[in-house]
Length: 216
Image (tube, rainbow, N blue to C red; front, side, top):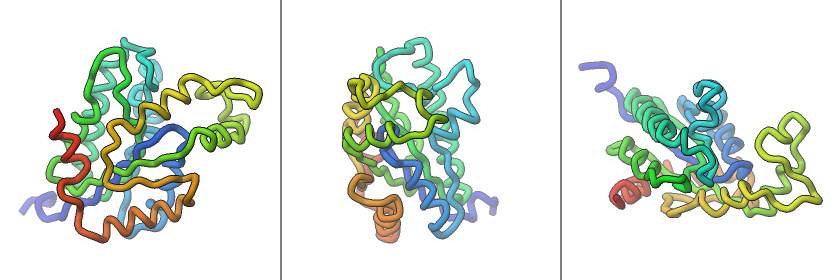
């Protein structure tokens, strides 16, 4: 029997939410405290360490259709990354990954539905990470100088930047999840515990990804 055939598929947890919603903090708890190997294949690592600088932000492209020249590449990058997530699971490795999925591009791409199809037959959970806009702004304003201005300039006396508002409006569409957590109400550890409890039970049927894949 081949090595890959002798293994049970690893669990997959995809966290979806706007920047500064608290996804990365939940990932850290899962990697540190959940049983087994949990590999992080999320957007931050992919953009910072995998995507060539001249093609960034790649899958981190924010809503608004600002870079139509990158959009076809973004679709391929997403497909490749989700294929990799599926491959890790089939090798018996658990995967946790944070994303900011949206389809607010200048041309309709259907990226989320395409990604869902790569996970067919695998134990994958889709978790919505919510955080109110006022809390997101508080977190942005509290950032140290090393992070301020790397995404979009914010200030206590400035209007909320349009990209920040766009993320809040677009990232949770269509809003089909297996679980939703709110990081303004619960700590990263408490959010991770909700995920752990869901993993300990039988997967929902159909799962959120199965529902999303069947929409198109």
